[in-house]
Length: 100
Image 1: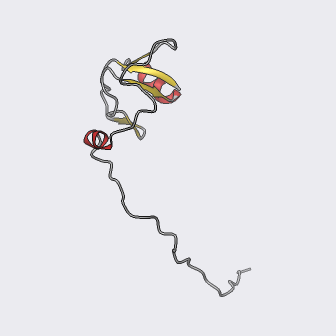
Image 2 (image 1 turned 60 degrees about the horizontal axis):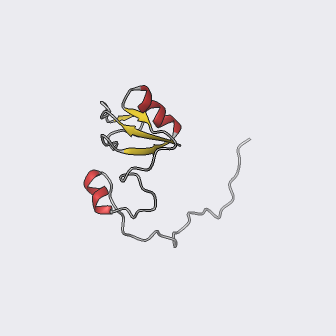
Image 3 (image 1 turned 45 degrees about the vertical axis):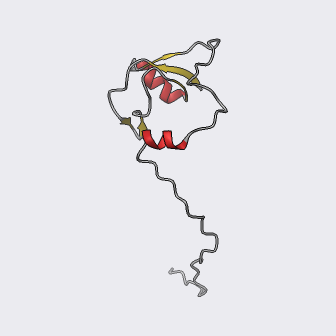
């Protein structure tokens, strides 16, 4: 994991299924090696020194406000139904004959 700060908004919204439009200008993120390498190589981000104090926007353990997240990501939908555990299992009790 690498701490990065976004210095320029990415010019494309996604690449190979990785969404880049969620990164906001001036915000710090903890990103994986592949995403961080892409952002650094394109000049969209800069590394944050390891000894730098955490910015107010980058605090771990702080509760996440779901309404803020949903306001930024309208494609997210919360499902309120319980998972089905009493599913019928398709079974064929007759033995199958193999062709030779």
